[in-house]
Image (cartoon, rainbow, N blue to C red; front, side, top):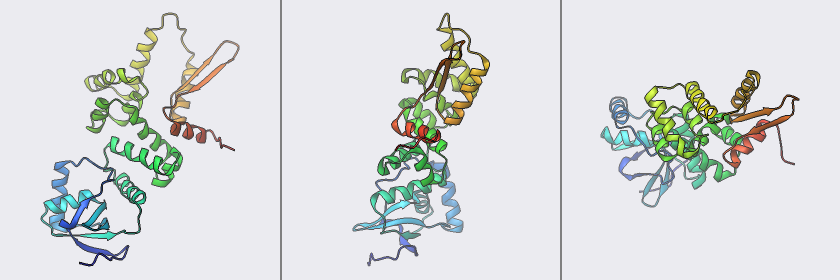
Length: 266
């Protein structure tokens, strides 16, 4: 069998010659959704081709693993594919990651790990990663923040018990506190704002003589936190002197903050 293929041309490739790529970002496939897709494929075929690279043993799957798995369940012997032998390992990873992000087929933690690796491969800031995948810098920062969660909370996020908004708040807490608050979110059905209020209330109760912060300062903190996608603390005395503190969890987040504020290194 000739392995010389033209890039960009859709071809029918034997399913049993295809193996998943070692750099695939996606690891979880919902069995019910896979069965539903296989039934659709059985009726209408595979609408969008998968992406492959030629290998000595056959073909490496770069994008479209869910379609490939469903096609097997549907009993297909061949599947439409585009061969991309022009891609390096890093480029192949990016192609698969972008497709999965666009289809929203990754779990939150798979997306976070994939975005982290993309940044490491190319030395990108959050804003640069966002431009590369067609998403906002805030989108990238929010997902990368999930990597600060403890493993048990990451599982809750992946399983859909904790939403991304809650996870963003939990990621700013110490590791030993995250699971307790995650349990409260599930047990009490807390909104994101409700979670924030309960955390703030508990912290305030531990500070005996802490004066209440004026509402305008609190509003400024909330607005800056939303604008910069990080935790912001403003402290000032009666004369107007004080400090502005920004929290970041990695150098990439710091780069994103600096870019948001318009800073460019000389």
